[in-house]
Amino acid sequence: MKNILFVVDDKKMGGVSILLEDILNRLNLNKFNIDLLILKNEGELLSKIPSKINILYGDEFFYPINYSLSSAIKEKKLKKIIDKALLVLYMKTPIIKYIIKSKRKKILKKQYDTELAFKDGFCGLFVGYGDSKRKVQWLHADYSSQDDIQNYKTKFKKLYKNFDRIVGISKPVAKYFNDKYGCEDKTICIYNFVNTQKVIEKSNEYEIKKDSKKINFVSVGRFHKMKGYLRLIRVINKLNQNNEFNNCHLTIVGDGPEYNEAINLIKDYDIGDKITLIGSKQNPFPYVKNSDCFIMGSVYEPFGLTVIEALTLKVPVLSTEVATIREMLSKEYGLIVENSEKGLYNGFKKIINNKNLLKNYKKNVKNYQYDTKKIIKQIENLLEGKLQNE
Image (cartoon, rainbow, N blue to C red):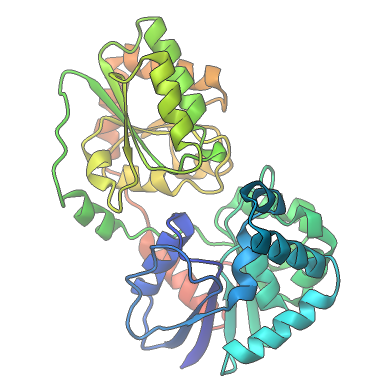
């Protein structure tokens, strides 16, 4: 059996945590001995990992990896400021390499056949400076607009020479990464695995009542600038001002750093009857299933996991133009619009004013299927050392 190590930064709610949990629950664990290293024991997800998988944790050294020095200063917490300042100093020098090697000796007790940095950034440093037989970097970011390692570009370009494979979750993600870091010869594409059976089962866990006389739009995601929810609220306000959203309603499931600002914006616009904020839900799928159209209004998005989930539940999609969307959403199942307020506004108008359009999307999406078996096969081949691109 192959010894495998997955490395993630934390276990906070988000697409990467959900993706990893679903992958680990679907892999053939009779073929692999899998350890999961969580550098920061922080967050509420990754709670349904198979019992065969051994979970390891990093120590306090890793806690500053996911917050900025400016945010630490803003919080006025001296320890956080010092810890982050020291980490930035280490990252700017060769010292980080020797610290990671020392931490690895304390945390890891075996040799691994394949070690995967399952998150961009610091996880790559941890794996890249290790001694596993094969090293894999998983890319989840859209490097055309989101490059969190830009300040350490020289260090990472050198580091990626130590990796056997770079896995992009879509072709655009791989391309944008290689435009900056030049690893075309070792980069492959494996789409995100989606546990479609789980999505369907969870969508039936509870009922959501909807007004059958209205077009019910829904969106699910974190209230973060990349998701564009403040922009989406401004679009709904404009539609409402023009009397174009009278028989419509938008429900948003999720929370995040811009959540309170979104609440205040809805109050300022006096459109509380047009938009309902549900907050965070461990299971948002009943809301998606019982909607007429799913909205992904992201400013940038490396994959669009929620689009696959919506299509799996046979719900049409209205999406902004982001890196991967044309690989995920065909014109039979929904509408892709310019990534702007104007684009979203026109997209809503097109769907609202053309009842046959939405009706045809609903009819077509009943035939939608996502090839999960192929994706798991690709991942298992990768873990076995069959590193060719399929």
